[in-house]
Length: 420
Image (cartoon, rainbow, N blue to C red; front, top):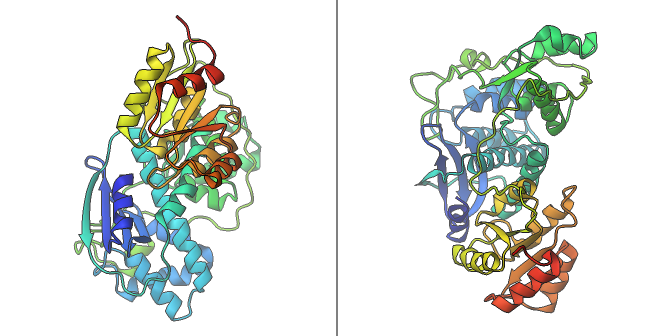
């Protein structure tokens, strides 16, 4: 997937790139001259659109169907947004912030699917030219933010929880005994399987990450359950536009299985619940790359988009008696580091979407990962690169092509003697 996005950027692609896993509805990325202009998920587009515009723009939401884009373009939200800006109904700054937030959300969901399924998505492209875009966004810039958000999500042990999942009360009486009466009344109203985590975070005035972590702890105590959002009444076809079988009328828009969120709710204080042994933690999608630290033998992790480099380094490391793991997808790096807690990381400098500088900095910002040695593999052995890598938090670097003796010296320095 990353290589396809990178290729689209380098080719200055104009059009849509569709991604899907199995029978799931696709996600779409809209490019203009190789830069991202919009993104969407086929499921629940209307309710996402409503939430992003916010309650202060309810009149804008109501007018969206009348602008006529829904049945004619796969990026009807974007065209509606552009029309609202051109007519002065929405400020340009607010529109650009909405665009960035929307694309960050969609890319996060794509990354989550990529990392938790362990499978590459099905890809197809559609060429068309988006007229008069409000702004272009660099894919690399957006993916850096998304990778950091995904790393934080993984650190909070939320890999198995989609931000678009809907929590629902399961044992309300037990939950009532845990929280205040006022908090319980709010939760009883909101946790009915009708609202996604993203929507709840907005209406409860809470940070999405902390709210999700708390509600996940409630699920581990079997107080609540998570379920998919109800299917929308309005169906969307695979191109992203709305199906002609479901007219995009004002009435169906306002009632499209997307109940209006309560407004004016106060911040709800929720105590973090423990996870007793009697109620097992929900099973997370298996990661074939994960190597659990069940042995005292140091684990060496290589992050490089070249399978040849990973295989070559693996032979050297395992022959020296160390455990070894590798991955070619930098978006999975933070999750992999958190799961395996390696003794040493070899990190490629130049990779698609996220380079070694950004990834090194992200690893260093995660609590508990700051002391893991990171050695960068690079073919650019200049002074400027050395300074940048040092500032990013790397412990050293090795020139490519890799040499057995140099690798063994690094292993001895940072990992000590391997078990016989």
